[in-house]
Image (cartoon, rainbow, N blue to C red):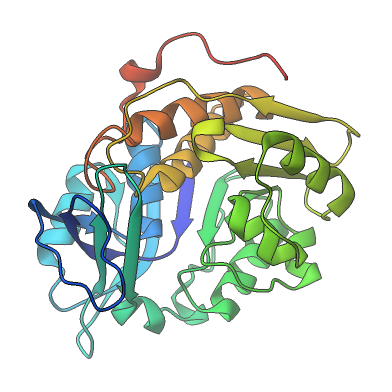
Amino acid sequence: MSPVTVVGSVNRDFVLTVEDLPHPGETVLARRFVEGVGGKGANQAVAAARLGSRVRLVARVGADAAVILDALAAEGVDIDVVRSDERVTTGIAAVVVDDAGENTIVVNPGANAELGVDDLPGELVRSPGEIVVIQNEIAPEVVEQAVLRAREQGGVVVLTPAPARPLDARVLAAVDVLVPNRGELAALLGTEPPATVDQARDLLVRAALPCRAVVVTLGADGAVLKEAHSPDTLHIPAPSVDAVDTVGAGDTFCGALADALGRGTALPAAVARAVRAASHAATGLGAQTSMPYAAQLDVPAFTSAS
């Protein structure tokens, strides 16, 4: 089984639940407040670790992060190369979730903005085929160097282009699996977000992105996979669940995908397992609260195309 390295962000999450999301200028009272560990990097690392992967996190935190680091270590995440920066605080995310599971998020990057190229381990890939997971909550130059270094060293690169921003063609060409949601795919291509599964499939075929594969996450509609060697797309539907909070579901998807790929699982089956994991994550409040363990996903995976 190949190890997983995650390069990315760590946040303190402050989650408030409300009946309806506030409109501009409106004040509403929260029904519940939960504080936890978040940030796309930390979330993806925990998601993969809970499923049994050996996970290393490359990140920066502030001087206030002792509890966060303890929590990550307790999940089995290797934090030996997480740097503490005394000059700044750990990143903070304020999350408001309504009764329908929709959310708004405001992030103060804090120490995440200080993660630099020099913080990347020289051996980003410790063994051939190591899965390296990266996302855009860190500086563009760090994303670029992490992608290129991982590819040069024989890793399998999984990139989540979130938050959405332009990506150099050279970087995209070095990505093995690109994992955007509807909006991020649209931002990459300069078009409107696909509203349906068929629109997502059509957009992927026409886009011809230079990655080895693209997986578009579609929330309750599951995901659509397009591999570069095939003219066809594959739709993997999601199980029906009672969604409480979708924060962290996309990160759970990426962590589960990395875990499955590290086990040598074929990409379609890995995507199906990731869809199930993300659906499970949406059933609880907070980014990491409902991230599943392996035993909770040991059921037949989706294999049919639509």
